Amino acid sequence: MRDDLPLYRERHIRPFGVNPAPVESHAGYAARLRLPFPLLSDPGLGIARAYGAVRPDGLTIARSVVVIARDGSVAYSQAGAPGAEIVLEAVRRA
Image 1: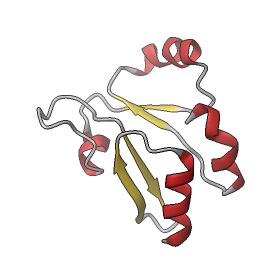
Image 2: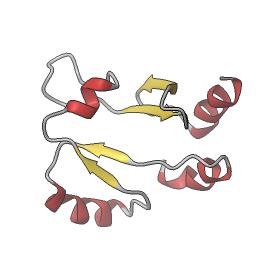
Image 3: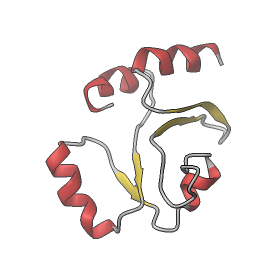
Image 4: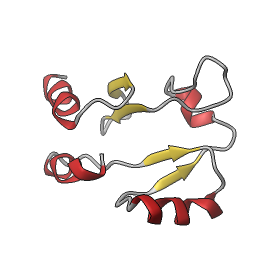
């Protein structure tokens, strides 16, 4: 997603990540990966559960892409890491 950030921004989509680690650990992690977007801390997996992004073990987050529309509805949701073109095309059609 980092490399595709300009494509998302052109469509006024603001990416962020969700990670179960504590906030204190996010700065180092984001710096190492050079993430140009914020990370939200989700230690109890509440956000991940709400958007269906928890692995079957119920203990860890599964990489997923969820796009939330301005009205709060889910405009797109897909497990894994689909490319920007796939995500943006699906959002365009929604």
